Length: 407
Image 1: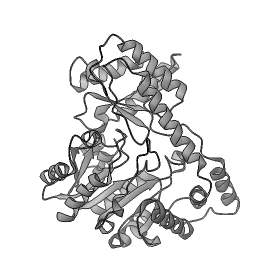
Image 2 (image 1 turned 45 degrees about the vertical axis):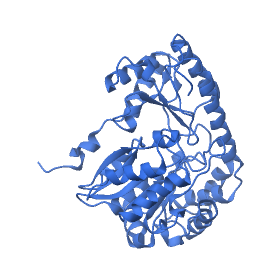
Image 3 (image 1 turned 135 degrees about the vertical axis):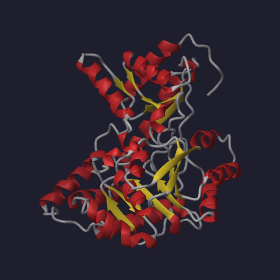
Image 4 (image 1 turned 120 degrees about the vertical axis):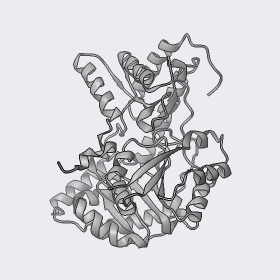
């Protein structure tokens, strides 16, 4: 029998999210109430003016084959946004509109990786990254723990740069970076990103910069785009999406900004032969999102920050669950070592199922890297009432645990 793409081990990896959601659904079908802290999409509706823009465009006949790179109107608006908000100087031909951020990452890995090459993935990382790399034939990935130490500032930028250098191999083609980070909520600073820049330039590496949560920032944190740093525009592929900022997950629209050297590949070739472009009316809606009122973006950001504070305050007074304060995205990556019988994946899964019996659904940390056997991801993308109730149930469960110090 010929070898199939489905035979690649990385593509056969089970989805922890799928397992948790199936178990939660089964409980709901049995009549139990489940508080969903496992999901990774906004619980808000898409702002009305964006919905109306789609309807108007479709009625006007924007339903035919699009330019595979994206409409020139949207790409020009994206160039304006990238210059204004991200400090990225680019040309419309460097921008490719994609069917969501996942598609943009798929194009980036396909465009960069050949057989025998690898990408170094800073971790904990979004759970889809291994599979997206796995689609690039003969390519592989390795992880390098980084965000927890960088978020806690327990490692200096110089030491981080040294760690990066030590992790590189002859076949390393690039580095995958995600800030604000899913699942930790860590927002990398300018000096921390400079460490990546220094190593990338020294070793002539590409960087894939995933900036899906760029607008979801707390406590005055600032988002810095890697491609805005000196020496990085020519070696960075910057990936963005409308999904998180504008609650447009189902619309499937994102974009990737690549260096001019990749123009012949990203838009005319890879985008054309994977999706033949994004539905034109959706692109008009994305244009309305960019150029229309931004108050909904701020409303959602404030809501996530309030929910973060509710979760942290609701868990005060016990030590089984400790949450490093996230500065971005809409997740908390909790240390649950105080609640585990052992530090392994079996004990972690047992804890996740125990919490499900309490009616609280979360994701095990091993979804974001095999080393995170003492972590769970808690999503803030659910109603504040559910956040409060989930914290109350967990607080009650672990109230007898003596505090082990401040978070």
